[in-house]
Image (tube, rainbow, N blue to C red; front, side, top):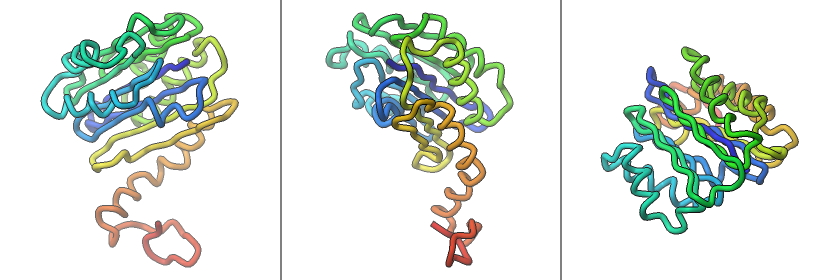
Length: 228
């Protein structure tokens, strides 16, 4: 039903989540990031409450492995849950409960962890991680989309995917990228097109929030200064 990755850029300290699914609006339920803290997915039979809870635990000082162990031991219906996470030190964790659907798998690499369920084959997460690692030095958003495209090319889910999302946490208190394709025949390709529109503007929108007088105009009709 879902394949995903969470990752950290060691150079910038930014975090990202990318996720795709046959279900609609996957990122609304499964993707969670917090500046300076980490990134989390909660998927399979999803409990969206686990994402904020995991980030809260990491904010209190728990590592990603410690946080995953707490959730696996205490979350309601943990056998149905699958989750991944990365913390501020780049430590990763993944958990797939005994009731995880279909062919499922997990893979970890440097500053990245991937997992999926109802996969075409169990190697899909490894292809995702390999593509992320091979793109070292590129922009974090670019790396996430390259990795998701590799996962799709490796077989992705057993059935067609319909939704995808990308979240990035930067230095601001909110996600600096929160892009979603909620129902499409090729959602990862559509997500990449959204990213190409958003990426050149992303930092300017942060400036608009924090220091509007320094923000450039994008030529919005009737606006000679900073726009919306």
